[in-house]
Image (cartoon, rainbow, N blue to C red):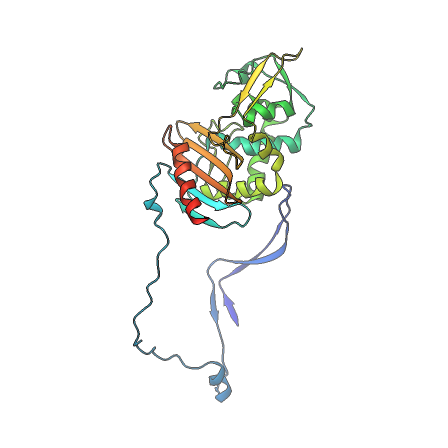
Length: 315
């Protein structure tokens, strides 16, 4: 065999995320032409192993009609992209525009959470700065000068989607390094279209595809049940201490009230529209429903429409 016009690269995945490592492997890149060389003077054995190509005979039977998969356009949702799939098996049931990188808003905070868990001692006391407190507010209402442990900040981060908590965690170490780790972890998880410009998701440059977010859902389900457990909390309160005042922390996820809810996160910015990741049991199967770019006020409706569709399949 003769190979022309290809180069060979050597890869290895070394993972910090806990995902399975892969061994060294070779990959051929670039255009490649393959020639199979026979004997200069062919003998009968050459033709036996390489029979000449002949025109196919016309079929006398009618072609079998294949039933096409359900049209993605038949699902009446406002989301610019979505994926519905099983996070245990990886099977995808529905998807639309799933490979396009879109702004993801506060879904970013899921990766902020596990990067913080991996890099910041949870007992570390973090002070909220005036710059952080001035960010787009949320109902947790963290104030400048208040102090919280890194572990406590995970609650407003994941439940009330606190931008203040996100920036406080990222800035408690080298912020640039923290953001680099977010993007690096995303690649290791299997999110090749993903990039993070901040820890909160306020930046429109925080982008990922719906397929990327599905990969994140599979990773969270397999390796980060501690993060999903926090997102299942409907309501909690932070009592007044010498470090901070009283705070009420409520979940923003509309499906957190459902009995089969495993975990998830919401997001919303002008550029991203509404976004949401939901992992929920459907007929005892762990199903992820990801919507990106839903119209304002429509992410729950979009998700419930997709949920109803997949429930019919899994009955």
